[in-house]
Length: 435
Image (cartoon, rainbow, N blue to C red; front, top):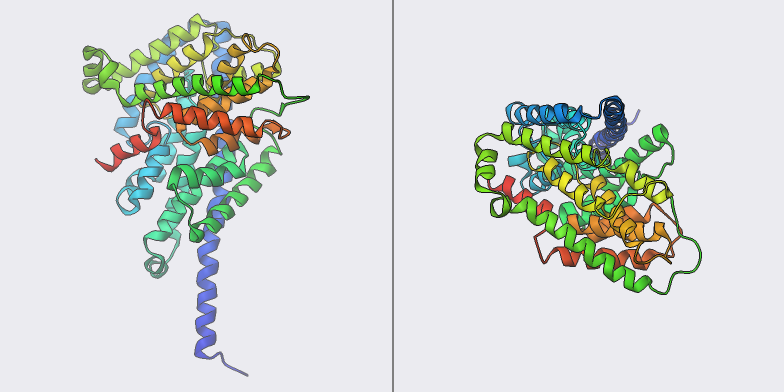
C-alpha cells in the first residue's frame, strides 16, 4: 500500500480547504435566493392585506399609517439600529470597513429587523420597495456565514473573505429580487465597489447563479414588471424624447437626492428640531402625511407603485401628470423617518409616471416606449448608476431596438442629477463611516 507523500497530503489539505471555502459561498447563495423569494412574498402579502383593509375603510390609513410609522421608528432605534433606510448605504460602508462595521451593520438581528419592519411599513401603505432591503439582507446573511469557517481558514483568507461574503450576498440579493442576474453583476461593480477585481468576480457570479437558480425554481422565469413590447419602426422624435425624458427625470431624481441629503436646509426649523429631539413623533407626522395624500389620491400613492407602473405599461391605469410628483413626495415622507425600505421599485414607478405624462406631448410614440425611458431615467438619476439602471430595465424589454435610447437616457439623467447632489448611496454611506 502506498502512503501519501508530504506533497500529496498538502494537495489534499489544499483541496479540502478550497471545497470548504466555496461550499459556504454556495450554501449562502442558495439561502439568499430562498430568503429573497420568501421576503418578496411576505411584502406582497402585506400590501394585499393593506389594500383589503382600505377597500372597506378608506379612512383607515389615517390611523394605522401614523401608528405604524411611530412604532417602526421606535423599534428601529430601540432594537434594530442600522436597519433603517434601504440598506445599500450600510453595505457600501461595510465594504469600505468590513472589520469595523460588518459586525454592527450586517448581523442576523438587523436581518430580522429589516424584514419585520419593512413588512410593517408596507402593511401601513408606505412608499417603499423590497429591492434595497433584499440587498442588505443578502449581505447580512452571507457575512454571518463567516462563522462556519474554521479559525485557521479565516486567518488564511483574512479580511478578504468577509469582504467577498458581503459583496456576493448583496449582488445575489439584487439578482434574486429582480430575477436579473446581469443587474446583480453590474450593481456589484458599479455601485458597491466602483471597480472590477478578477479575484472577486468568480465569487460574485457563482453566488448570483445559485441565488438565481433558487429564484427560478420557486417563481419561474418571471419578469419583474412584465415584458415591455417595443414593436415597429422607431419614431422620428425619439432623439428629442430621449433628451427631454433624461433631463426631466434627472432633474426630478436630483431634487429627490438633494432633499434627502440636505434636510436642514429646506425643512422648517421646528420640524427639523422635532426630527432630532422626538423622532417617534416626527415619524408619526410623516405617516400622517403619507396617509393624507394617499387617501386624497384614491390610494394610488400607497405602496411601492408596482401595480400602478404595471397598469401604465399595460394601458389599464390612467394616472394624471401629478402622479410622479406626488409619488415622489410620498417617497420622501417614507424615507425621512428612517423606515426600513428601498427606493428601486418606487423610482421605477415614478419614472413610469413621467413617461406616461409625456405621452401627452409625444402622442405618436408608443406608450410603453416612453414608460421604459422614464423608468431607466429616474432610477439612474436616484442611484447615479446609469449602467445598473439600464441593465435592470433592458431585461424587461422584448427586443433590443431601444437599447441605445435607454443607455442615452440613463446617461443624461444621471449626469443631470449630479448637478444637484452627489451619489445618494455613497453620501449616506459616509455617514456610517464617520460614526
